[in-house]
Image: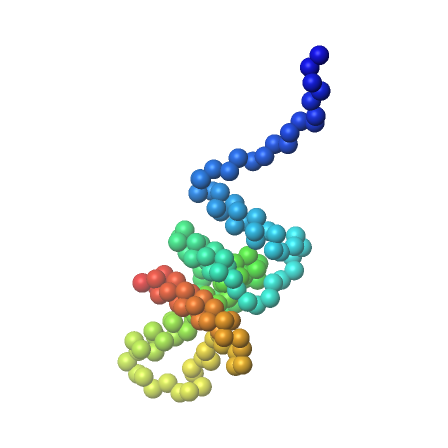
Length: 145
């Protein structure tokens, strides 16, 4: 007689070095961070959020910056989009002011800047926000040119 065999071994997904593997692993990490319900995350952005925004821009997705309001569903899908719109508006305003022949603008016409630094905030958080802001500015400038 042959030896009795135990239950069949479970099937495991084969991991290869394909580019899809990294994307899938990143997706699984993000999926694990956030619950399945549609609870809105806090206002802080992650590096993955910025990578997602840059990826959308690199793929050729354009975002209407002329519209005054950000689509809430799109902003929920791409969390860095709010910062992108704010930076883009400031960049467009500064470009139009510098290119206009009349540089006589009153102080009330100038928009308040995007607040990226909280006074008394954690130094590491300030550093992260400045880095993220710089990345979004680079995206805006690259897409504008």
